[in-house]
Length: 329
Image (cartoon, rainbow, N blue to C red; front, side, top):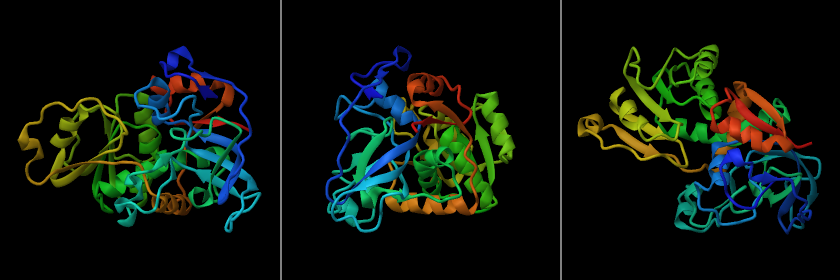
């Protein structure tokens, strides 16, 4: 599915198109794609909320498939291996951020379905060291959401500073939050979910949330850490209001509407607000291992590739109480 020009999802800007089969360069593998997850970043891409470095573009960055061809120099992977390809497509490995083990901030990072064609397609190529073997415990469809929703949720959870047994707040309850809830419950934490959707509240309660309500509601206890997944800056002062002293509020989105002026009292007492940007390969490896260990259950809704426009419209209008996944093959 090819994006020629950004447009609202309601205008169905993605179109089926025949492209030449990609050929793996040295150190690359070619992946025959089976499924690709849907993400709000895809929505921001097709609607033009993000400045695009490449057009036309095949979106999609939660890719599950099987290697069918390897380039020269490939040593660890082989044809027939099932792998996942996440948002982080490549880094330079030499910049100051890469040298400090923060490759997610690499000055020359490239991202799947943004700088290069992504997973709304039959084939793609990637360097072998950015392709991740997937646990056998997960089907293709259930593995896909782990590669972005899972990984960015995992990084957000770690950067929030939430500790086992503490109280964690989640604002917005889409694909990432329903996976983070399971991580937190595995660590014996109480999880408080703020969402306007009754369907999302029901799912949160089913997965073990201690309490659910809307963003305007007051939870029964102050929270030790919180994560905002919804791209709404208006949630920041509401979340700070319920955060204990020295607690951290992590902002997980790639974009966010304007944050309103803050009363300093909400931030005082060493409360911290921090953004979360991308993820590292180590994050991905750690999340995949932990997801299989728990095991995490990914709630999914599967669409055929030809329904990508409809699926993104459902995502935009919060009609998904689970992670959307495109079935390619």
